[in-house]
Structure formats: structure tokens, C-alpha cells
Image (cartoon, rainbow, N blue to C red):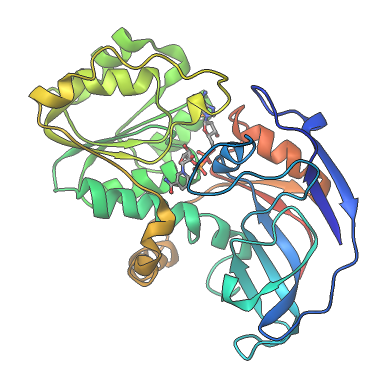
Length: 337
Ligand code: NDP
């Protein structure tokens, strides 16, 4: 199998020279294992966190010179587990950044290619979709008529968070980094007002949010951090809830940025902030699927994908996340079924 390796830990923005590749022979699957042919792999912002040595996190760092790993959709070629038969399509958190993989069958779940395109199991029906649903339904707990602000709104997580916000009857604002994304959010995703954050500073964004939500923002879905968090702290309503999902604007920083000067507003406004890691909510997958799959099937939820063709494009796909190259979910197509 061919595997993409991490050649060096990036300082700042990751670049092509931080990645390499190698070809290795795979062992035959043992009892309880499967051999899969990888069809699609995911690139995700959290992988940047694994490219730092010696950082204590909920997930261990990648090793220098070793292959990267991550979410993938594949087809079972050999199965030594009764759970899967040859030809089954599966999704799992292992098997990315390579074209074949041998691993425990327990890491995989069977997926139905007739229900949705296979790549959707890495996006709207997969980990990012579950993340959006958890942040909204379990943490923000929307009430009809409330105001939601989603940063990183045109990405994999954000685009579903916005549409679920509308589904729950909220007024939704979202922010993204290009005019094209802003247009998609307002015209396709049904967002009431979208902002290009690159055209704003804290003062102008605070003013713009207040014009849409004079009584304040009730729910904040945090994907980005930095300036936008500061603007939200200026505009958050009494009793607001903030789901802290990620803060991508800081992922390539060598030193942490100084915090917002208005953090104290959390106190006076009785704001509830909660961080969450989607992997702690896997027990809710059936509830997520029962709610979101029908919305998707009915065309009530739209999703975009940016597809990179071929395993060798995986590093570009990953780097593109930090340049805003992706529209919706960034995925790499490795092979046809
Ligand atoms: P996206 O599909 O949203 O891709 C990343 C996007 O982030 C880019 O397209 C870009 O869009 C934006 N971005 C990149 N750099 C910056 C910056 N400096 N400032 C503002 N925006 C930036 O990724 P995901 O949907 O997969 O992830 C979104 C967030 O959710 C991330 O913070 C991620 O870490 C987090 N996450 C957390 C999980 C959890 O369990 N807590 C699980 C999954 C994701 P633009 O053009 O708008 O700049």
C-alpha cells in the first residue's frame, strides 16, 4: 500500500515539504480484522493538532516519518470478521492517507451507497455532521425565534449547523471568508445574514450583528475564535449559550494569541459556554442519523464538497483547510468502487 507520511512537524502553516510517502507490504488480516480498499479519505482541521510533538491532547500526536491516519470510506476486500462481507462499503476513523488498510473490524461501520454518495459519510452524514448536530441540539439547545451565529459557516460543520439552526426556527447569521461562500450561505443554505469576516474588524462586526439582532445573540457555534469571538462577546444576549467546537484561526500559531479583552461579559450576561469533542457523543449517532438523514433525503439540507483527486493530493487538501480553499467538506478521492 502507498501511505502519506509526516516528514516533519510544521511550525506555522503546514506546507508540502512536511509530507512524504512510502510503499509498504500489508499483512493478511487476522481474526477480527478486515482489509479495505480506501475509496475516500477525509482531511480535518483537528489533524493539525496532531502535528505537534509532546502535546497532551484527547488524541496522540502523529509520529515523524510515520504515516498519517484519519477518517476514510472504503470497500472490504477481505474480511476475517463476521460483521463484514467482501464488497461491503464501510466508514471508520482509521484508514485515511493510504490506499489500502488492514485494521480491526470494530473501527468500521457499514454504510449504504444508495442512501447518500459515499463521500457524504465523511461529511454531512459523518463526523462533521454529527458535530454540528451535537453542538446545536445538545449544547445550544435552540428555542424557536432565538438568534444563532455560526463562525466557519460555509465549512463541513458550519454549513450543517446553520441549516439545523433554520430547521429549529432560529434567525441565523453565519460568517465565512469569501463573497462566493457568503452568497451560498444566504441563497442556498437559507441563512438570514452572512458576513465575510475578512471585511470586518471587531467594531464593524459588532455593529453589523447588532443591526440584525438588537436583543443579542442567543446561541454561538464557535468554529474559528479570535476577532469573531470578541464581536460575539459584545453582542451575546443574557442567558446565551456558546458551543465551543473549534478555533481554527489559532491552529497554526506558534504562540497563543492574547485573549479577548471582553471575556468578563460572560459573567454579567449569565452566558453558558461549553466545549465538546464529538467522539464523546458517539452514543447519539442513531438519534443524529434519524433526524438528519431524512432532512437530507428530502432536500431540506444542502451540502457542498471540495473534491481533491488522488492520494497524492491529500497534503494539498489538508493545507487548503487553512487557506479556506474548501467549500463545505474537503475530501480526497482515492479510488472508484
Ligand atoms: P471546514 O470545512 O470548516 O474547513 C476549515 C475552514 O476554516 C476553511 O474552509 C476556512 O473557511 C476556515 N478558516 C481557515 N483558517 C481560518 C482563519 N484563520 N480564520 C477564520 N476562518 C478560517 O472544517 P470543519 O468543518 O471540519 O471544522 C470546523 C471547525 O470545527 C474547526 O475548528 C474544527 O477544529 C472543529 N471541529 C471540532 C470537532 C469537535 O469534536 N469539537 C469535530 C470536528 C471539527 P473560510 O473561507 O471561511 O476562511
